[in-house]
View 1: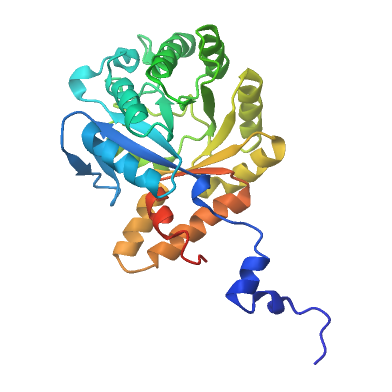
View 2 (view 1 turned 90 degrees about the horizontal axis):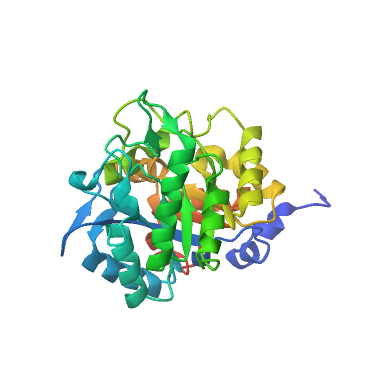
Length: 329
């Protein structure tokens, strides 16, 4: 049989496959989300996220030094705030001596070259678990919330963060934060905007990790409807015009089409958040012996790169860094 085209020639050996590979996953693509809590010499595994932990600051610093040695260049920091420090307005979020601020300063002293990205949202700090301030009718009020987010961002910048990452989905918050940072002399601090953040069911384990689930209602009045695609481009454009440096789609796995659309719509770096529910599903299936965890993990992250993500936030970052040089795939 004579065939002009035999695509299998390009798949014949590992060396040939590597030669013609279109998409490559590297450690440089990854941001490692990490949880910090108060106390000393303690590490708690998140029950719904096997292999992911809340660390006290002393142990967090050791873990950060280790992952930096593995080649991970950036971490995203999330605080587990004790109930007694929460209130209805999230005022602890801009405490200059708060958990986040202390942690950023300590990281910059111990591992100064790692990029520190700090979350800007009120849900870890509020008694009600929402990302904004509630009025007397239980409705999130946008502009007063943005005022607090600005204070939070300035406090984090003063502590030494490299980038703030507003994840709240309030209207106009990127522009307000950018203006305030520039006015106060923090023009070097970047903004990673959660631009297309959907009201997703994939966030459950993350909320377990921080104790930040809403106590009433849901987040559908400010996070995006999973049914909407075109709206994501509008949100991305707004964040770009307001001064975002990186735009992000969250979640990632069920929103690969959105990642692709956003990548086509902008020249800015596009991030994707491989969220806690996506992580937990792979871990659970692997524990049952139903899948090859390593291969499914890498294939899943590769799909996000293939869709157009330049950057991936993933709880798998450390595991990937430990194996990425071992002839994958």
